[in-house]
Length: 166
Image 1 (tube, rainbow, N blue to C red):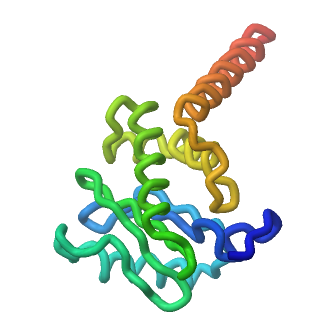
Image 2: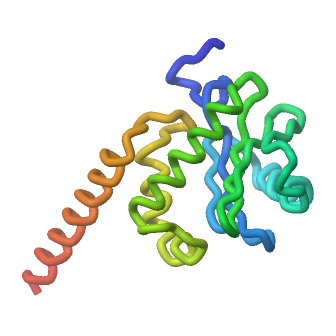
C-alpha cells in the first residue's frame, strides 16, 4: 500500500473518521480526518445509525460501504465506529480502537458515556495525541497520558499565573 505522510488517511493508510455513538443513536464524539461535506457527514452518521446499531452482537464487526469500511467495537453502551479505506487491515483497526479505549480508561479510570459528554475536550486530546490525520502516531498509553497530564499542569500554572496578576 502506497502511504506518504502528506496525504494520510485520504491515501488509504489511516482512519477517515471516528464516531462514538450511544446505543440510542446519540453522537458522543465525532472526528473526520478526511475532507467531507456536511451532507456527507450526515449521511455517514445516518448509515452508522441504520446499519450498525441494530446489528446483533454476534455479527461481524466490519461492514463494507462503497469507498470505505465501517470497523466498530461496542464497549458497554458505546459504539466506537471507524471509517477506513478498503485496503486497510481490519484487525489492525480493531486493535487501534481497543488501544484508544484503553487510553480513555487509563485517564478516566473506567471510561463511561458521561465522561465523554462532560469531558469531550479531554477525550479529543487523547485522540489527537494518539492519531494525527487518521494515522496512529503514539501507541504507548503511558506516554499519551503523561503528555495529557503535562498539558493540564501547564494550563493550571498559566491560569494561576494570570490570576495572580489581578
